[in-house]
Image 1 (tube, rainbow, N blue to C red):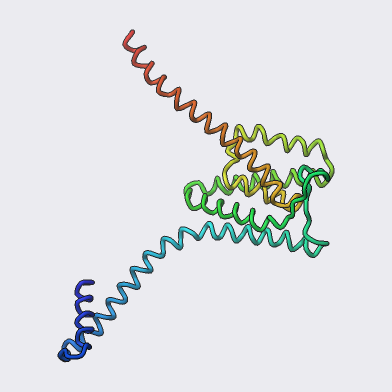
Image 2: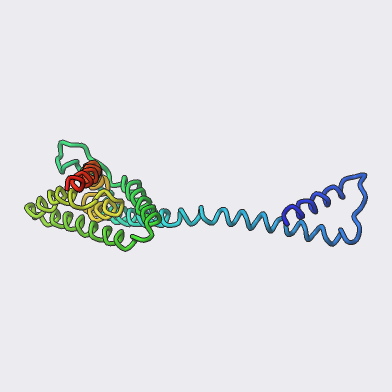
Amino acid sequence: MLLLDIRGLSFCLAARQPGTAAPTDGHAHFLPMARQRLWEDIRRRSVDEAAPMTSSYRLPLAGALAALAFAGMHLGFEYFDGGVRSHHVLNRADLPEISNWFGLIILPALGWAFGVRLRNRPGARRSIWVGLVASLAYGAALATSFELGATDITKAIFFGLLPLAIIAPIYRAECMLGFVAGMTFTFGAILPCIFAVLFAGLSAALRLGFVAIRKRLRPNRGASAPASGSGR
């Protein structure tokens, strides 16, 4: 059908060139229909090719925009409440200050990564949302205890990240986004992101190391089983 349409369109173009014969009455009705079918086919194919690309970016873009709105709400609250704040590293005055404006970059980036994970793991979206809510509550608890001056509770929650890094995959995007968002209104976004990256790297290294050791030991078990059976 497409070949026929192209031939009809080429015939129409050739008929309009000087020195060529005018089309007959039958061709005069056929050629506009051929051109219309050709352009409809091209438009339909372009839409079909663009649809998967558009849908593949829908969730990451939604995650980035939602995180950007959250960051804008936080910075807007601070801006009209005396100005956007800066925080000293480790809460020490002798260390550099980091502005909360960095949240406009960090939170949308984490939101994009969260959307990519939702897109790539459609069967695990419930567990991904659970991880986001749990990490959000954990970060909010840490920030709240710090605001209330409960030093012992703050230390317990903070150092509780070490066993969590061992037993849970806190390097995933939903865990990092929830942890950073839960602490943003107290510490901004960049300081929680630094700690999230450190503990996420520790968690990934431990879990990947455990998986590598288990894979190395598994062939030895398979090889020892036939040997024991042959001895019997």
